Length: 301
Image 1 (cartoon, one colour):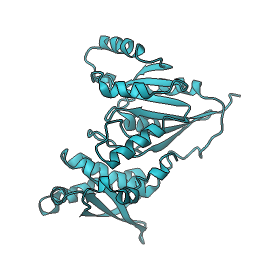
Image 2 (image 1 turned 60 degrees about the vertical axis):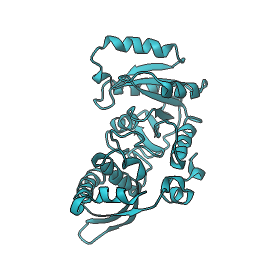
Image 3 (image 1 turned 90 degrees about the vertical axis):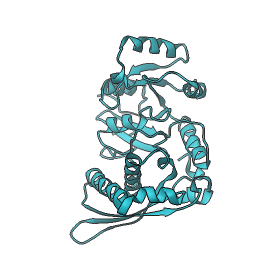
Image 4 (image 1 turned 30 degrees about the vertical axis):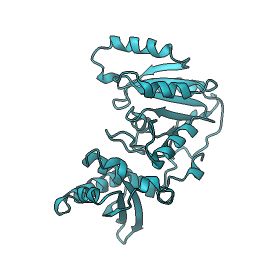
């Protein structure tokens, strides 16, 4: 009988490289929000992939970037802390983007004592597949990667091969989490992230990084329907107006999309009520960051 294997795998990379998409694809369900806006993931998120002979604990991290505020500093500390003490590192790079200073910075932070898999993502978007070999050879000269695996996280291309390969690197170990558990994220946190995702989908670039979402109340009512009350926080009055929209149209659309996503993700019928409030410059104020779950004291958990 094959010995059970387990291990912790951190996924790192630049913003929009496809880290959250990869984890969602591996788990077969959505636990991390995704969008085409950079810096969508703001905190570490764990996902558990369990088979008959292995359990892989994935840690999705914020995209590595140059921080411009205290929230950005927290995000970078969260990403860097996730590199240490794990069994394997997935460094995911967008194969369609030119190598730049951001990728160079990440490579220079990679540890030499932990196996690092380079995942060249979005290969389905490459018009000339011959370019892939050039990219692989280029990266080979940059770092001694344990494996280099071309993938398409969105299309689930070569992901099963990746999972088989990484399992072979894991050592015998216990099943840390129940086999039917896919994340340690509380439902309230998932719900708040779904609301934030819908704001990202529907608003322009000036809004996404200025918002936080807090679930104020979640209560099951008679008949089984869940009542949820959430507040969307922004930094300026002008942003509040954009999110509410003309005659409340934008907020209504955000709420409708979020409710549908919650019902799909959590398997319950929801009534969702949204409010919008201004907390000026919240991304630079420790008290607000802690209230929204960005607490540096918990960064190594």
